[in-house]
Length: 612
Image 1: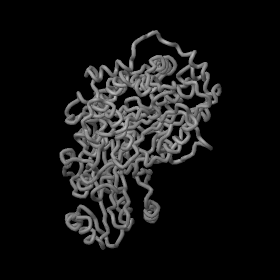
Image 2: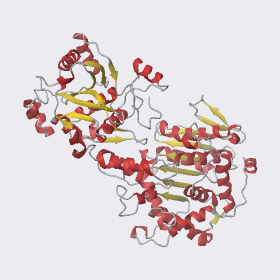
Image 3: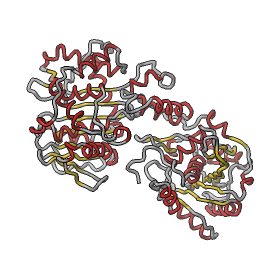
Image 4: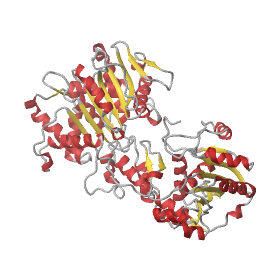
């Protein structure tokens, strides 16, 4: 509302923070990538001759936006809890550009903004702050602000940042009203101006009748499968004089995507306004004065795996919200586990990736491969992972025992697998899969009972033998085909604790009563088993030399053939449909590792929001 402007403290500073950043980047005082350098050149060039196109930079308007962020907004969570939203110079450049540039009629110049940065650089809080300003302090009556994304959970993260900032800010909290209980909010209302802020996603595709958005904050654009949600909301812009589509994203891997189109356009927008354009692709490119571009990237020849000096080009808030130590750790992971490489390059270093990369290198796996006799652990506690196959696949059992602790008091393990494949189709599948099933069978590494599909009775009987030999603590399983297997378990009277362990990356199994008690004793919330957590535990054990794996070509083939899928929270899981060969043994081993840590505090990875 208009009166809100009077309540924001104005500073007396005459410094033009937007221009200062642009000049520092162009001069090389601030290290930035090629597209950000072009964006800064564009800004300085338009300050010089933009008036010929009716463009004026209103420094007072930029300062007003700075003051809203830095005197009204408060950050939440971690080390920033309750602190004022002090804009980093790169953020000040973005905010100053969006709110400072005006057209001849006094309305804002930019109607679209595309921001591409590495993960952990504060994109979501920045977007949330823009939404709160548009709703409550931009003089717009009935402002409708939407946090939009491909999935409800993604839109909810950006919106949740905004909710937390409101609750941290006395100035905003007393003027806003939430719909939904604590932690379940789905709407922020600013009744004085008749405005609201709410999340919306492509999978619902609904915002109510006739949305008239003022600001649309599109999160993780690289996850959008199409333009459905953006186009639906942009159609409502016709009712507003100065609407804004603010897009934020990590880099992606699909060059037939919405994000790649927006990325390419943003790169051209920045470069096409500079005097340094030599690329013929920009010849005749029309000027787009409505799109703001801030695309982080490395320069040609930069190698983030060997040269830390280039990291800041993709991570402008390096040393503020993301540390060099953290990036050093993820680079070490990328070097040791190729399956992590593409995700790390994409998420942390703004590199658009292409091909799948194998999960495991031989140099990482081989030190763990040894010979030992599982019978040496008779009477010991054992944790089991069970991957029940389809008719013509491999059924695998993974077994894990704890053998002690290392110098850092971390657990040590020995692990092995059992595998089955249908005997009647083994030769045909040997030709189809190009896997030496017959040799493995002859050498005793895989069992091939008669039949065109695995008779789960063989697996149940093996579990019964294990129950006689070992102290089985838990059998982790996926729901697929488990009911059929359970019938065979019941028939032979086998009583074990079976715990659900989904194989994909979106769901967690239900925590058992024992897991709940263990978590309660540590003052934590019980979490069920899931593949991202189990996979990370196995990776850590391999990298730290804390696990010995019984040599078995079935397991080696699975480990070397697997590829991973990764979500925006850096959760990874083994992807059967995208892997080169059969990876059932690797999946079973991961599940067993998750079971072996079920009572530990470290079972879950860092990012686990909005999963059930």
